[in-house]
Length: 382
Image (cartoon, rainbow, N blue to C red; front, side, top):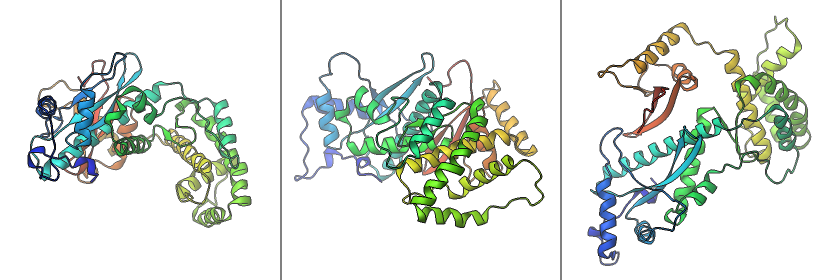
């Protein structure tokens, strides 16, 4: 567990570690503590600080001291404002009332749940932004497969770390908290598979309507320019791909066009190599494969969007439950894939991709839960 989650208790400090706080600092510390609730599901109350265009509040220096003394935890949280399609970011302040070992796990869960909400907010913000077009995709591929490519090909100026630095009191944040927060958010966004997360071009997404055309372009670049570059200059990576190709099965009775075989071949090969080439190829080549996998998976989903009959029944039942106006039924469906065996991974994946649903991850008691709700005109969250 990160060191910043081990908060100090000034009352138990030894003489060598004594913490000196003046009355005003103690007052602010206890305001934060009295605002924080570590007990219960969906009940984490967090004191939040927003940065406006006015002057810096006089208490920022006090908060900075409390952070440096490890008396409070400060971390960023993003919120998507659907009415204006804007993204906002604030700082969350937490301190413990009781210094029990169990509280540290609850502190971690509140932190992770907040970051999960931030990932969903950023994802919604990016998806509401202008997606990449086919003409841009070709330019991106040309850039990524150019050897020794330098600089950054960025269409959108969005950068999580830059937003935190620009729109919060960054001096209250420990650098390791920023790094861990950004990493968790990006991993969460990548896991959702709605957006591809790359180092070279940032966050990448395409509309469903462009998926077919995008895959055709990808197929050409992958089979020709990209594969040729690997074969000529990255022998170890090429040998690994050649070895994996032996595991690709082609139907001997296939009688369709050659493009159909190429399509299956590229799709299957991308699934096999995945991230296996990391460390063997340049950063831009790795980003090419990330985008290639994103487009290929999106293409497969469009082609195979149907779920099994039993899964469809379960999905329909869950969506019906979420839309029923009953005080006895929750608006949320919470699934732990490892324990709730009646709900397959296919059901969870289909609900995640369902345009009628919103989803996020929730962490409690060391376990990860998938939380779903049906989109409504009125907000589910205050």
